[in-house]
Image 1 (cartoon, rainbow, N blue to C red):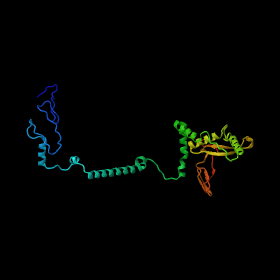
Image 2: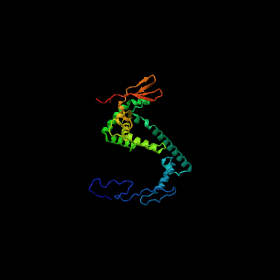
Image 3: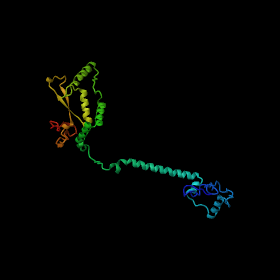
Image 4: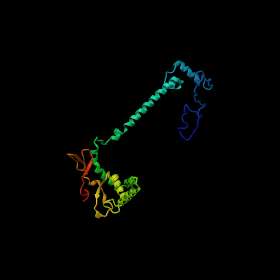
Length: 281
């Protein structure tokens, strides 16, 4: 049976696996055999035995199939084989988990992560030599970067809050009231070099210097009676830049490290300061 069409390639060549409308008969799909003894009857249009019978004849001539992937796939599963396969799979999972744990343990020091990084085995005093440079970087970030400035402000607010105010607890109510009133009076004039700087302002400035610059220096200043203070003592805040960090020498009864003098028992006993800020012209 022929069919004409607009294309010279029409009709296409019939495929052996699909029905063809251009041939006189339609080829059936091969159906799988469910049992070894089942055989279909011969087809009248082709003659001879059906496909299962021909297949059995070829099997008898060729012999049984050799064990392979397909034969194992269609073999019935035995309980002993299932246990052996499950045990092998469990061992593979355990080995893979142990390997992944080892890789994660040493991932921080792998070549990809540690490439170009310096990890010197120096002591804490040697590491502090770069403190001045880090302090300058931190201040520059606070001056020019909004997130850094906001982070410092929020951290100081969380540390100081509304102020840390001590309260007397001697057990004597009159003495406690006198001490609390005296401290409240002193706290309103305790900060040297400012007008109106109270004890809360002192804490905020000290906390900001610690967060932004790494440390803060506070010096006790004794005042005269003519200054008119309730308590002739004030606290002066100084930037850590005034500390002579280049002064590191050994002494007969101690040592000086970055401007801080220590006793033989490592107790700070003096600070070597500049007369003026080294950054001032």
